[in-house]
Length: 336
Image (tube, rainbow, N blue to C red; front, side, top):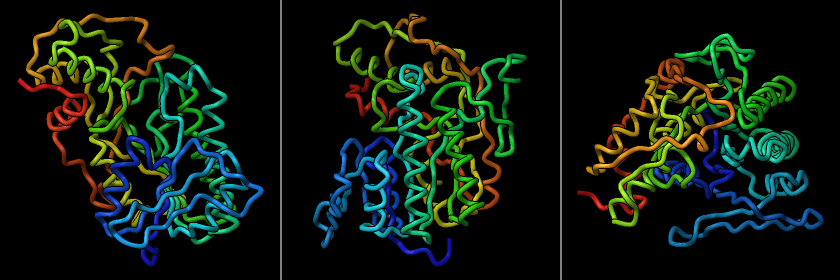
């Protein structure tokens, strides 16, 4: 976006994507203020936990704020005075959203509403990227009440969220549209498809495989992998490519619009597992554990990145085998 200043507030900067995004933004010349989760700011005070770096060798700028606290968020925006916000902070686990749907909606929707309200009131010229999810499109099975299975999903494809997490993210998109229409906020919504890479915590499909394979490589576990549903097909992209797209959208995405970020290629979880086993060099048996299945599973989520490629020239670069090797190394895999 031409004319935008260079101070960027990244909410949820301590998470998997946040670390990679902060690195990418600094390499691109931005001043980054990192927001951390889980801390409550006393809204009765004008003080917020803001520490601005004064020299390159000092700890990067950081802020602590509970995004559920509307007053605290207003103080945060006023004190930091960002030129842009990339809003990563969220409850991002589909499995957890089934266990705690109310908390998921509060964290993801109410937190975003507080942020956009604060931008409207105290930082109206601020650019905002809200990070949604490909799960917004999800349809669990052909002919069901959720509609047909969708592939090659583009930004105009029909949305019918199939889990509480997806619902919270689709609600964020509706909120973005309302704030753009009512207040002319410079806000862009992003729908990333599955992203994987070094630094992702255990509990997701690729890290679940990696954690087990790494333990086997160290002799700490018998050569048997416990897995969930292997038939789901997903569109996987390296997180380092994903954050390059976020930087590009910060500069050039159209306000009030939505963009997919994905590879455009479908890969079954079974194929991904086979690739990861091959990269590990291990000989293992695989056992399916139905306890790892989701209550509602979406058979296929494959996106189209034609829009962001056409408008901004972005495309993923990192080969899948390189990504999988980096994930394995992150869990202490001993290569063979």
